[in-house]
Image (cartoon, rainbow, N blue to C red; front, side, top):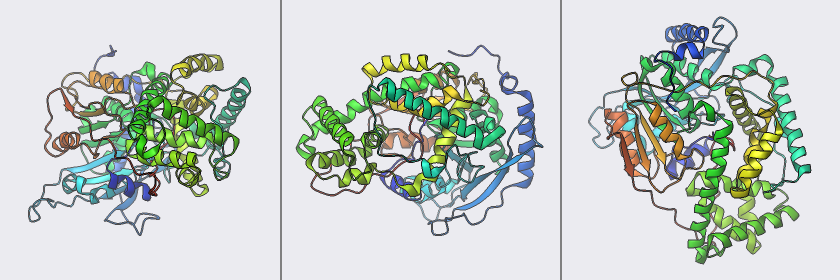
Length: 547
């Protein structure tokens, strides 16, 4: 699923500028995930513990603030063959400051490393340690070494590519809500070609990029950092392979935060989860339109959600006839507004851009929605990893008629994201690598230390039912819900109640009862349309499934 950002207005600007319960008996996870792979993980972890991580200057990051350092951790490409081909994962770290931000003379005990993954699949957490510079994170940064990394396939970590980056950004593009048969055939051909490109470029290695290996890599990273037990913060897709980790290596868990949880039910990985996400986005799109309507005096886009939709559709039709700045067509407009479905701090910027475009000024829209060639290589890499992991993780329908039937039905009631999601994931129908059998995520009473799940009730990227399912499967877990809110990724965000629960857990091991609720964070304030606004920061990750 898409990457979640460690939230806060300052944090977003900083990081973006830097670029049913299973019946299996407890302990059966190792057998179901592959005994050879478990033995290989133990071998790799022992080697990593002995080698440690030689931290030094970060490549291409000499001018970044703070004391972040980088290194590499070696892992097997194939855990069933730990003596075979090895790959390197790039890792970053900022040491615990040991300074209490509220009492400058008080030394804070170090609690080890806090490892972060932002989701995706395909997103990098390499710049996570810089979050410790923000006021909201200074207490955690005092107690923990903040550790980020680029998962296998991402960035410098044995990067995947399925297409020439120079050919990756095509635009302007169309985005029909109810595509014609001719358009569908065109997109099917593109999906086949993309799947073929992944197989040809990666070769036999392609089969080894999947969530079970991401979980195994996490255990090797834990060992390399010298941690007997892991403290982990996973957002969005990071919650899924974090939950796999908790199932495979429960004795290696210290504390785990699952922020915006993916539904881990094996029957939903990943085709059904994508259908659920598309349905949920329709509700979030309605939330956004209602917010715009409440601020009609500012934006002039309509006094009701229906009128706002008509304004949006008018812009789509105009862009289909003549792209804005020659760069932004309906596909780019939809992509920009899909991002706003993830993060409501983008609502003022997107509404302003739409308003100005319909008044005759395309500048803000081009600024926010146009694709930039210099970002193509990174975007193509993120897309390749996303597709590889989700296609490898589980069986997908291989008959186009199934996709067409399910999504045609869904698009009648939830047109906003449905077909966009189909085109993102359709290469999985034509995938050439073997598929994994999804692992049942499960921990019985006493098998796992208490864990913390954070979820927003109206999150569309990872719908709330997923948090309920994860909570049910992990005995001793605690679910903190932000009511009547839908921003994706809550950790370090604008909700002090949610942050308080996370901080108490990470710093003191203290949790509320089995469930707790927080009132919603404040809605964003509208920006006057007459005032120019900077483009909203782009989050890492890829569009489509659960990020």
